[in-house]
Length: 137
Image (cartoon, rainbow, N blue to C red; front, side):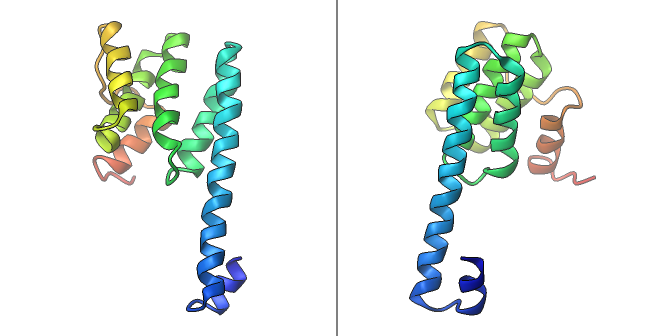
């Protein structure tokens, strides 16, 4: 598909190839989310976090990013990693404040006496600094 897009960018074939690439990426993200949900249902938090981390890093332009950030909050809270949970909530709030996933996240954090904010020095905090604050180093 990339070959078609690169060599024939203004054709119907390139348009179709772009659509198919987007569809494939969405399907890959959906499969990762499905597996992450399974791990969460069986309370295998570390594999779930690894799958969700993959969604955040690789599939950030899909519709699954919002749920992935919310599920990260749930998983981190289950492990007692409060700073990471709050940071995931802050990223979700900054980018998707008007969604149901953010409302759920805010309620979940509030029920624990927490609020979405960037804390610690985890991989999520690095993403927060890059995306929200524009600090790339």
